Image 1: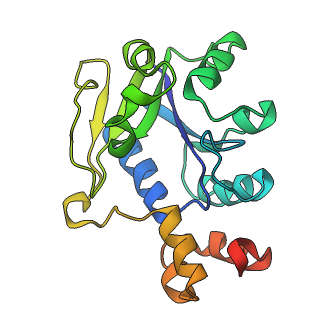
Image 2: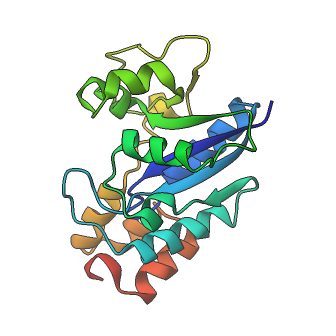
Length: 202
């Protein structure tokens, strides 16, 4: 069966942690044929983000390096709020997945733990197929997703915190002028883009 997995996020910037998620899903969920990186247009809770065009370009740096991965600017093109419920309903309305048998949504363990607080969180849990990715520092406090149509993926090194790389950490390291450390947490092409466009206060 042909399926696509939507991996949404701010990607502010996209990091090697995101790359680890993509690699792990493709390696461990064989029914997924493609992963679509979907940067949000605006943050649902008002967090400041770099311009959408920059985040799209940085995502493309990753998708260019991994087979069966592409950038999907749906939320940005439609100027959506960042709500998963609204985005999924709009995609279904427009027939985005009509050429696929079905689709998954990729979510980190940290977000899975708090989905009850999302807009229509329980409806999302019940009606979508999920791939929950374990994350270092995020203990399992809810297991609503532990049913046959969903998948659980544990990236290599999760228990040793190897997967605990965040966009926030990259931005904080740049703010502290620890550029060498920040550079190690993103792809070389992403770092070159950040420097070239003077993002995050560089």
